[in-house]
Amino acid sequence: MSRRSPVSARLPEFTWDTLDAAAALAAAHPEGLINLSMGTPVDPVPPVIRQALADASDAPGYPLTAGTPALRDTIRAWVARTCGAGVDGYGVLPTVGSKELVAWLPTLLGVGPDDVVVVPSIAYPTYEDGARLAGATVVRADSLTAVGPTSRVRLVWINSPGNPTGRVLPSAHLRKVVDWARERGAVVASDECYLPLGWSAEPVSVLSPEVCGGSYDGVLAVHSLSKRSNLAGYRAGFVAGDPALVAELLKVRKHAGMIVPAPVQAAMVAALADERHAEEQRERYRARRAALYAAFTGAGFTVEHSEAGLYLWLTRGEDCWKTVDWLARRGILVAAGAFYGPAGARHVRAALTESDVHVAAVAGRLCA
Image (cartoon, rainbow, N blue to C red; front, top):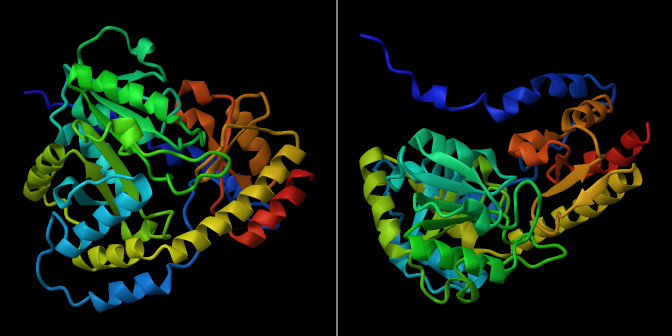
């Protein structure tokens, strides 16, 4: 009897592994590597969060998959402040970071081989990876007309501010997507991990009344504390929206053991309840963005979109891998636009997450 193909066969090579050669070239620079590729936070975890984690570290029992009452209340309050939404405590759920939820959401919702998942034309690769894991068909589209008349759409991903482009979608566009999906019984999942980082445009949540009409039916918003609070290492995120959908996710996650550790749940309460550290971090990114924007445009790059979020979407009008190599020879590592779909093949993405010292050194490297 022949062995079935492993699930891994449905997936492409891991995105960041394809950057290994450029990373080695950049690391060989005499003045060292400036890493603007993955977007890993480098600033310290705020003391108030570290203290909350330490205080909750004596946690011998199993944590609640649904989150502690304190965490659910804190998430609900944060969503009300930030998204303008009145989601109740049953419409929020902590997740093991946001990538885990993005990757498994199609499977958790019962999406399968006969179904279609719509993702943006230039998009975070995990949207497509999650659809592949579920065996679904992926359609890349930025407009509803491009999707066509198919009734097989079960899930529509939207991302504003966008990764990698930093594009902000207006509320009217988001409302059209929600209305279109509701007419077809599809779920809208909005990746809003960069929502607090608006620069030249103010992002709007899918949970905002002007988008969802005050009803959360068929709508989910995904959030992360990785960038807002420097908690990438904690794997802390959450989903909020339709209580019925959240209940479905919770049931499956209970069976599958997808649980945020109790000390991390306590740290999330401290992080979401404190806006001061988040605003301080936002200002660090604002200053780094200004410095990198000036450095790249001064070196002849064009910055497209990038109205919000944690990245600059750059082009020199050439194949992205040629740009990656050119920068790597100057000790600067960026992400290839091809990572995010065929439409990104002439762009690169530069993250704002390097140290102030390294960011300040970029301009000099580009002129070398």
